[in-house]
Image (cartoon, rainbow, N blue to C red; front, top):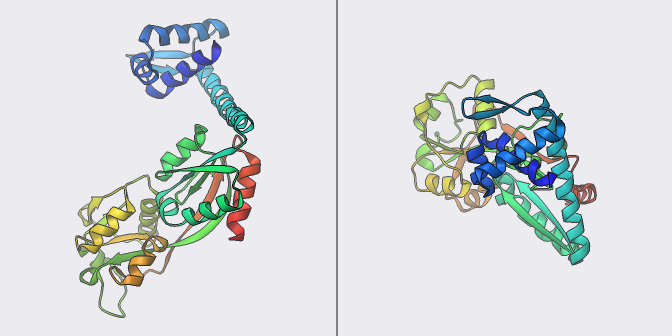
Length: 293
């Protein structure tokens, strides 16, 4: 069937070789090769240029790729809707970046489910790049991100504004009444999120905007978990910069402390992000619910 050929085609596009695509799909390499050959015979044009062992899309291949990706998104949407009809329940999938997924959205999901008992929600928590990739693949219906995204490619609505703050134990904070400056940051042994995360992006943008020059050695660790970063900072291994939402409990208990930056406060916007293939009714309803609450 043509859909199997399309899946093989998209796998070759993503993984670059017949061998890699066949391994990911659980098919033999000759089978994937036959799928590609079948598509080229069907459309009457080659779809790839051969560069060494890699297969690189030509213009015809890029045209098919765009159409195939749109078709798969619509197919996934239809499958979900059919499952909803059969099972009598509605299933939707949220994707959220770490600050939102771990510390903000859970309470919204709990209340939304209470108000909609016939609905099931699942959530994936990844960094911004990964969440947007899942949205592109149709594996999440609605994304909540704190990092940058292409506002021409996606539809979006503002969720809320977040402040990122400097955190540490007393050893890493300036004297009372003094702001965090470049000299302190140079000595503060920063423990930060990985590149590709919204938290890291906005910290680096803040540094560039305020011409804060720090050596690469000032970052002693990159950690993909906010909870792990907080534990490391609480244990005195260094300091960090993260969402105020993420450290509300620790600041209240006193296990972490904060001081203001001398350059002013660091804010970022958090957004709902969705695509043309997202279920419009759910997206609209969940966004309106979140804004009311």
